[in-house]
Image (cartoon, rainbow, N blue to C red; front, side):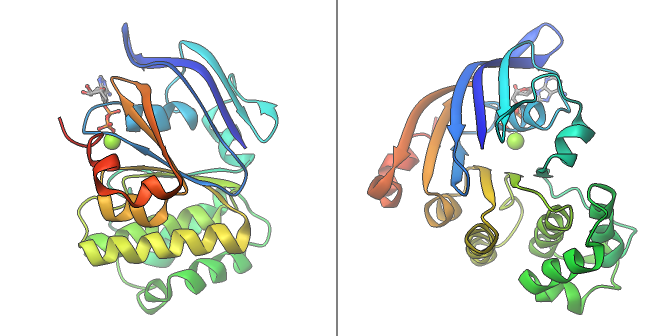
Length: 232
Ligand SMILES: Nc1ncnc2c1ncn2[C@@H]1O[C@H](COP(=O)(O)OP(=O)(O)O)[C@@H](O)[C@H]1O
Ligand SMILES: [Mg+2]
C-alpha cells in the first residue's frame, strides 16, 4: 500500500529524515517508534505532502505520488491524524467531523454514521464545542474526522499524547477494529508502550531520521525489545 524508497526530507538546508526505506502492506497496522525528536512527525508530514521531500520516492496503492500535492494525496485515500489531534476548538464535534467531507464528498451521511459507530461518545457530544472535550475525546474526534474522508490508509501521529493510559488502549482497540472491518492500512507513530504493543502487527524503529531496527511477531509483546528504541 505504501512504499518509501530512500526518502530524505527536512526543513531548509537541514535533513531530518535521511534515506529512509520501508513498506507497509495493505491492511497492515505498522508502528513507527522512536524517542522525541527522531523525525516521526517530519516523516508523516512528508508522506502527506505538507513537506516536500528532497530526494527519494513514495508510492501509494501502486502509484508514484512523489510529486503529488497534499490535497491530491488526501483525495486518493491518505488520511492524517496530526500530533496534538488538531481539532477546531470553537467548532462543534459534528462540525469538526464534517471537515472530513471536504476530502471525500460522496456518501457523506454514511461516513458520518461510520465515525459515530466507532466512537459513540462523539455522537453523545455532537453539539459540544471540540475545545471542551477531554484529550482522549479529541483523539477520537481526530480519528473520526479522518474516517469521514473515506481513506484507504490513515497516518496516526501519536494519538496517545496527552490522554489517560486506559483510553490509549481503547483507541488501540478501535484502530484494530477499523483495520479489520474496512481493510484500512494504518501507520502509527508512537512512543506509548501500551498502544504500540496492543495495536501493532509490525514496528519500524527510527533514530536520527532513519530505520535502525524492526520488531515483528511475538517480539512485539516483549517489553524490552520495544523499550530499547524508546529510551536514550
Ligand atoms: N518546522 C520545523 N522547522 C525546523 N525544524 C523542525 C521543525 N519541526 C521539527 N523540527 C526539528 O526536526 C526534528 C524532528 O522533529 P519531529 O519530526 O517533530 O520528531 P518526532 O515527531 O519524532 O518527535 C527535531 O530536531 C525538531 O526540532
Ligand atoms: Mg512527533
